[in-house]
Image (tube, rainbow, N blue to C red; front, top):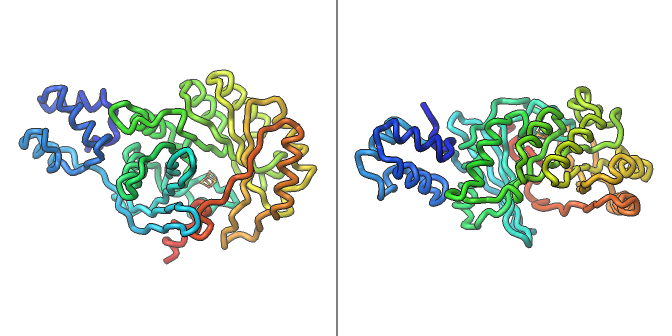
Length: 342
Ligand code: SF4
């Protein structure tokens, strides 16, 4: 059965026309679904009753249900666990910044990429999320918190380029004028480095930000943290990033989780600078969040600062990511994991 919430306006037009209805009904319906955020046909009072009855019968709407919400007392970060129609659990977060409210969403239930430091990887991939299930994370959070979402980061559970078509449809609907109209510039897609995905994404020439989870300055070190490094070398990834920059004119963000005594020395900082020197990019240093299943620790603040200053001295743009929601299981996939354990 078609999932109307995953359809763009053109596809919704044809679905409505096939039901023998006038085109403008599709526009009204789209407005309810993606702007007013109402997903109960009964409440769509500018649609004829007969159409509402037909829609409920032929197109039951997807939903996600809030099962847990944790609110940080430190900084207003809220973390949500949502249950999908088939009982899978996914995790999403809203963070407040000076520039607006940013929601971090999941693109898959589980993940097959197996990154060593990631709680989401522990149970493997369960399934891809539909565009509607990605949208519903943003929509529900806006409705529940009453806060207008201005930025979206696809950085929760899942590898977005492993669910490429659904990701693009999600971005298209999110960006549509008749929907929440969140500009592509305010959307960040974070990948562990799937080279074909980066190139395909570049070819679409969207204005979104591309973030790469790099985490190590050599292939050997990276392989120990991320199995995907056995498929793609750092050089392959950087080449794909240069292609992205050439196609879009947008800078690339490199995420670098700082693990105590592993990838945080001065030498590592110099190696990373050599890799990225001259590239239109930005490095985000992330004090890694320990998870109980693994035995690594976060780098000390002085070491992170030293690392940062070496990059800066080498003219690489760099910031240290502020830790948000430190009091609420803030590491990616951690809350979902503890829910599953229970
Ligand atoms: S860090 Fe991202 S890509 Fe890696 S296992 Fe976790 S969710 Fe998957």
